[in-house]
Image (cartoon, rainbow, N blue to C red):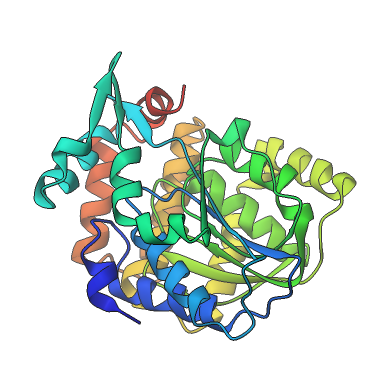
Length: 317
């Protein structure tokens, strides 16, 4: 892997995630009717890692396209704009950022860094919000999901893209071990509990899974009903925390407690205050502690009133 090529692209994914994405793309079993999908490319660091892996995969052919989906814009007053400006400034690509009608557009930055892969037709860039995104006609062999932080957005992927997977397809849930990903963690927990997905490794905040069973539309409707049952759905946090504790996690002491923080955040934002307090009490009574990093995460949750939903909606109205 050309680490310098990937490292020169500004982005949030860590080195261990970059290596994992490259290895998964290099080793995935492909046939001519397969494709690869990514949601949330940002400036293209993760895209580059996957593209590099595909380019050295002996089973890759020019008929296997890598589709990337991103709106490539956010609200000037939203949650994401400060990150866009910070990364663009540090990389001296601020001149490629376009602002119009209070929308910050960074598509030119992505195309600047991924130009060679786009020109060779390995990468097919699709500018789209999640609710407008449509699945390709090909079978999805690998899917990197780094866009939705809420189930309300993720279910567009669940409805349209998961039925296009195959047994053994690799699904990478970026930002799974993230304190703002409560409802996303819940639906992944249900997918695992119902036997649709098997998880066996992590890299930083990314969880790597494999499709065991392709969900039908009836399955997806049942999953959706389970997610709408707020009185019961939060119990799936405990299941996925237990499942993740059984596998070899990257920096378990830092990332596993984030699932408990996400549970507390989700409970509090859904006005289940007693359950949120009990979750914290039970966690501490079992002798668990919070590392410095996790403590900072909790302070961030507290400072934002246990919800960044309004800021997120500004970016994805």
